Image (cartoon, rainbow, N blue to C red; front, side, top):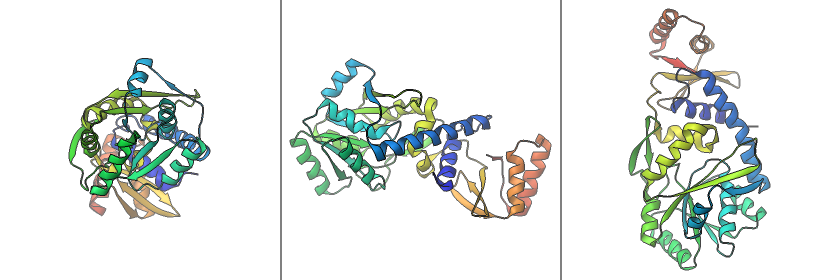
Length: 308
């Protein structure tokens, strides 16, 4: 059972991407698909390998065989990426460069279930971190890390890029690390289709984080429901569609509204909740909705332009 707070975060993320714009039905359809994807993803982490891994292009597979530094995203059935890399070079250990993730024990269990030789190095800026990576390179290990949440070898996000009409903070430290190790990075991404038990894996040669995110953007545009980390999006992404956007919800008999732009949850009373929902339901005429917004603003100083 996915907690309601997680569902609200996911809904906020999808709304930030602009999926609500002119089409609330699309927003909630995407949300339902994401919930189905989450069930499959959790089953993947808990039970190990699902289906068959299939690489879409044999030419790309040959290029993957020459690579030792892979960068990916939390998209599709991404935990199975370790199985794909292990199938490429079964005699080589996989080193996963990770942040402090709650899902790490699950990834470790998946590696055990899949009989994959894998170790984890926590990303940091210290010389010890680099020395561990240097040792792994000399042992001819395969590197894998994820870039869709701002991790890197510095404490601050060091770049901003345009992403789906908004602005995303990213870190480029992993590309700098690859350069220091003398390795060429390769962007690799998994897909997922609930109607097909074959898991596609696509890969691309990239020289920068900007190139990787430009490719990733194409996948999110058509399959936003396959992005696991949509729940963290508002921490590092600013959408152009967020202004005045609120999500009303009830939790344990208390009433709340999430301010999507500022990523703040406001506790409200039942009366205000009903007023915001009246805007959300779309049953008011434009004139009635504008009067309702003005009344709410007079009472609370909140301007509710849109509710989903």
